[in-house]
Image 1: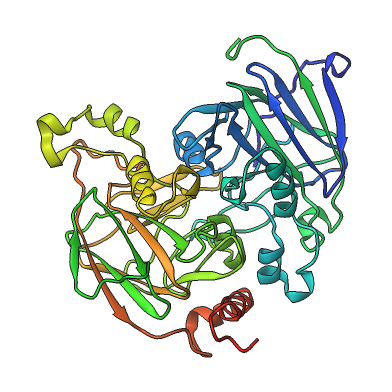
Image 2 (image 1 turned 60 degrees about the horizontal axis):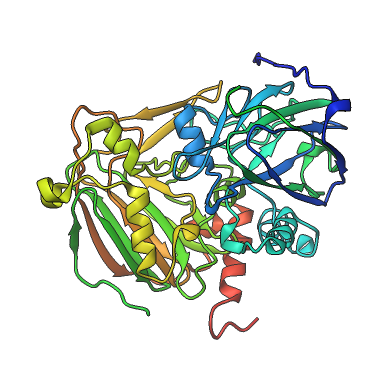
Length: 218
Length: 241
């Protein structure tokens, strides 16, 4: 399997934001139209669970189903436009040195961990705890949390309709970069999952950089 | 707020329906003419912030298609409903529902003034109106499942829609494993590209089937489902644990 990898020429020294988000932590910010966000997988194969909202109308939010249907593919990579449920573009991926990002696996939760791994995982930290804590602080609620992107995760579908979690294609230093097509709220949970081999049972930090840009489409 | 159907009814093509299925009852849907599609959304009837979660459903059971033996999970680790019978073998959980703008682009705009009730309405917009009848709204519209439609994925991740995958007379039966609010919209699949707009009717019938027993095939389909049913049963009124 080959992937078309696209690098970015933006200089980290010129970024207006440069932060490290530890595993188990969240991050929620507005990206202004034209700004670029780069997510760097510092140690490799980390899952970065991410939701997007139209900042002017948070009821119109990222829809994985609309996004994959309109691009005709379940994977996100350079050129993918992430759409809302009403079809508005939120962000466009403009660089990607990993090559494939997941749209089907969703986020871990305490409740789904019990189903997947057993009762002993009920009180382990999970992405939807982070999502809720961040969302509540912005006036959003549980029903505002939907089906997210997992940057750097590899979740193929088999021809007979099976879903598999494969070893990631990512590696230390790989990144994905996206441009905001409108003012967008980005909500990230840097996944704390300790029960899944896809991150070698060892969640790690990611680096987030934001650059001011020109107008969308420039 | 709990009401339920007792008699068979026919949902015309591109129409919307909602109703509460009580735990232990089942909704049978029949593709009367063949080639139907039904967008399905489920919410807990008593606490609708808990609703169908497609990613949790897929990853718990390692599936990207819905068929007999599959449990439909909420975002709270409970089984809202189960597919207990299915003659077709494939229902699409990947592609979601279409929108008014797509229909207008594909087939041209219509209006009630000129087309009366043959007006073409988008599934998303209709589902939001139907949610509003239950005091809900656009924020409650989660990812949906397309009953009677087959979409496969190739090694590169590309989607392939299989038109006409459902034969006339195909049936799928959804058992409610908790009291569940069901929303349906029978517009064609959003990847359907027939030259004409041809929405197809669907037969609906509710019957009592009883709750999932210890030997229930959906419960036993995988260890994850055993835990999902246990979590569901713990939350039922009168539950001992």
